[in-house]
Amino acid sequence: MSRLGNVGARLYRGEVGYDFIGKRKIWYGVSILITITAILGLAVGGLNMGIEFKGGAVFTTDTKAKISTSAAHDAAVEASGHEAIVQELGNGGLRIQITEVDTAKANEIKTQLSDDLGVPENKINADLVGPSWGEQIANKAWTGLGVFMVLVVIYLAIAFEWRMAVAALVALIHDITITVGVYALVGFEVTPGTVIGLLTILGYSLYDTVVVFDSLKEGQKGITKQTRYTYSEIANKSINSTLVRSINTTVVALLPVGGLLFIGGGVLGAGMLNDISLSLFVGLAAGAYSSIFIATPLVADLKERDPQMKALRKRILAKRAAAAAKGETEEYDDDTQDGADEDAETAGATAGRHGGRRR
Image (cartoon, rainbow, N blue to C red; front, top):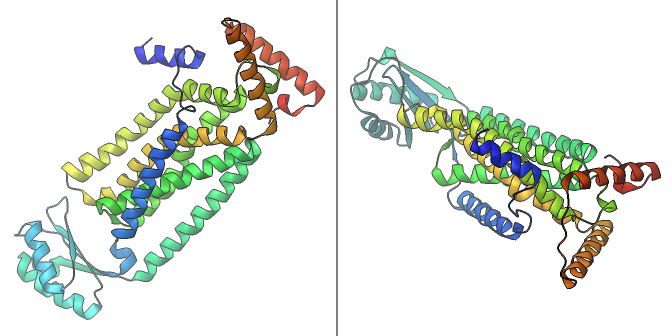
């Protein structure tokens, strides 16, 4: 077994672990700081909306231009009087986007670009894009986002419990805010591809969260029938037992997306790949972070407010204080404790009590 596999097995058995729940205020603070930075980026710089949302013209050449992309950018700005985005295509041609251009102005720009680029006018394609199409895409995206979140909350409330549904919703909002904020901070163009990427990361964001929640659901069965672990400690054990799995799945997902972003978009210059790859990359990383540092600690915070969990914590702390006063050290055998937990669960189910029922 590999070293990582050994660590994962020890984490799963509870032999080692990190106190994620105990240090939750640190993670909350980090998340709040990152979220505030993202919101400030949105408020100050705003989003660099693509031509699909603002309207304008797109000029493409199917032959190699005789000037560089920077010179083509200057020529496009001079011809249009507006800011332009120039991208080099795989065949050596250029794609030039200019916002807020009507049909008459587009024809003038096309003629001017033909002279400046050294490309025959009939080799330049001009496409006009109206802002109404982008507005429709944005409205449908907001509708899809709203429906998705409602369905997620309903499903998690039924499959798990309402506290987990609330925590998952907070984690989703956290991930989307950070992703959108990164776009504002780095100035990447927002296109329909970006919207697709944002909607795609919602499922990835929930994946690790649901894995931890499922482990937590199993671990909390018969919790009120034992006096060994508080709810927060069980939640912490659930995070640790699924930690290596979360890391592995996140890294495997990030590698191809990172290839699109850094190799395809950066090295090869395929700028259009940045539209979707940045949102996927940031969203995947934020989703893995929130499942460990936000969602589960928030569930523990909400659950510890429950009267039963308060009473359980009080009993456990009192027992530990009494043992400490006697100078005793409690040692537990995992197999014995698991059997006791199963007996407690069975007894609770027979008696119809809440602590032993399967949710």
